[in-house]
Length: 249
Image (cartoon, rainbow, N blue to C red):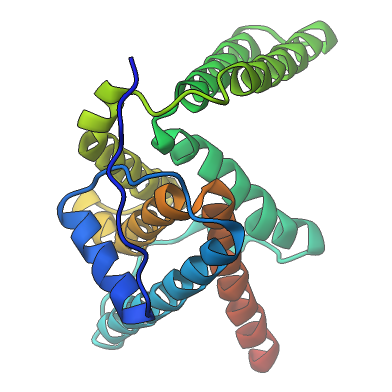
């Protein structure tokens, strides 16, 4: 069954865009089809500026807390050597994979939902196989399962490409949106190697806010816009870290 989704007026300024984002958070709902390419680029740029302002405030608060003696738990990312490969992983690969996993299906279209179910099923089966078997044959089987899942997902996307968002998905969209946003934040707890949950949860507030912005961008401006914004976000953070390391050297 399919259903009609509501359509929101396109904001005519950055502030109007940010107000629309806040209204969306109060009552998450599926808008109409994503805006055209040029309009999407503008909307994504506006939300990137909001993201940067929010991140500056949050990082400033964390910096102030550490200045007053708060000791932050160790973060696994702090020990990463920023080689060209690592930077590519952080700036290009990770945002692409995370957007596919957490937000590609937020359109509510049958093809997108079925594709992510297939992909997750393939990853789960391959992980179970890798856990129970070793050797070249097992490695080959894992690779074939992942490849097969990817191909089946593409087939689902193609065959169901014209289907509208599912009516039940649209009704339950607030649940799916917050599930995606919260899960995106919580998975970043894995970056910390120690610390009580009460200490760690506030440290993933930046990812929670970023996830809400990316979810808004995904359903209003398309998956590519969310991927681009996520890449720019990570790229700017990496640039700041690299610049700080060079100045400290």
